[in-house]
Image (cartoon, rainbow, N blue to C red; front, side, top):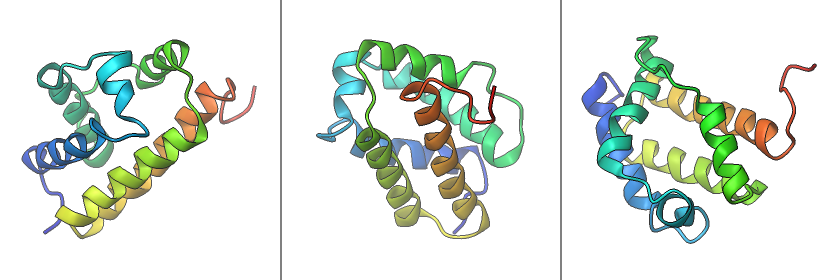
Length: 128
């Protein structure tokens, strides 16, 4: 089954955070750096992915700014982005297959790359 709607995105995000929150590499960002309230965060991240995958303009925040703030509190390293992508893509593979599932994995890698450039390297991914 492919990712077809908001409910599927919610299923994906719940499964992803079930892995990410206790993860020894990235989990501390959710538990110690921001003490994430999953109930509050989940609708926002679902809006984000609904925008990314289906072009439904629900996400109104600035994901880059949010992650730059996290980076200031606890410095991101390459391994954090690599682990996030690994967990995200494996979660997609466990639950879904098809065009949108592949798009989700590709976009996750692209998003992580942009976040890494903007936080670790502090530069614009398209030049100055």
